[in-house]
Image 1 (cartoon, rainbow, N blue to C red):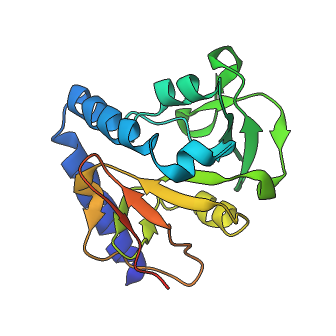
Image 2 (cartoon, one colour):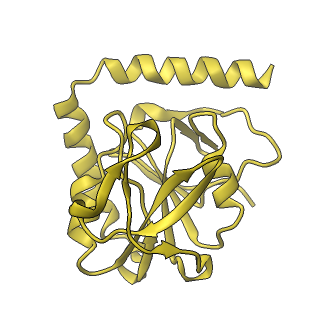
Image 3 (spheres, one colour):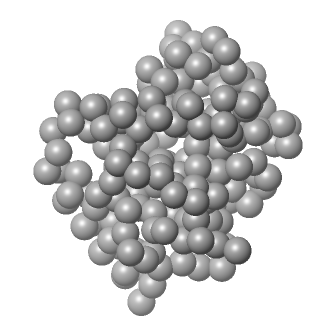
Amino acid sequence: MQKEEKRLLRRYIAEKKRNYPQEILSEYSSLLLNKLEKHPAFTQAETILLYYSLPDEVQTHDFVEKWSWNKNIILPVVKGEELELRRYTGKQDLQKGSYGIEEPQGELFTDYEKIDLAIIPGVAFDRQGNRLGRGKGYYDRLLKQLKAYKIGICFDFQICEQIPTEEFDKPMDEIWSEQTSFTSHNP
C-alpha cells in the first residue's frame, strides 16, 4: 500500500510541476537560494553537499558555480545502485551521466565526516522532515552515512501534509521552499 501511495504522490507532484513555466520555477529557485545562503548553517559551512539540478528541481547550477569559489562543493554521481561523491571543479568537468544528470568528473570525495551541510532535493517533503525521493533509494542509502545538518529544498507546492515513510527513510533537519522554511518536528 505504501508503494502505491508514494507512486500516486509522485504523479500528483509531477502534474503540479507541469502547471509552472520554467521561468517561474527559476524565479522561485532564486528566491529560495538567496534566502538559504544567509542561513547560519550555510555561512559557517566549509564543505557542502549540493546537487546539480534536473529541469524540474530547484535550479542549483548557478548557485553551485557561485559558491564553488568560496566553499568545497560536493556533488553526487550515480554509480550503479549508489551515489558516489565528487568535488565540483567547474562546468568544464561535468559530463552527462545516468538519468541525464550533469555529473562532476573531479576528485572522489569519501571523507563524509567533513561535510558540514547537505542540501537535498526531493519530490515532496512534509513538516516532520520526511522526504519522498524519485523511488530508487539513492539518497536514502547516502543519507544514512552522513552526520551533516540536512536541509531539504523544494518548491512550496511540494510540501505535503504527510509523506508515507519506511524505517530506512532519513528525515531532514529543515525544509526550505521559496515561501517558507521550518525545522522538522522529528525528535
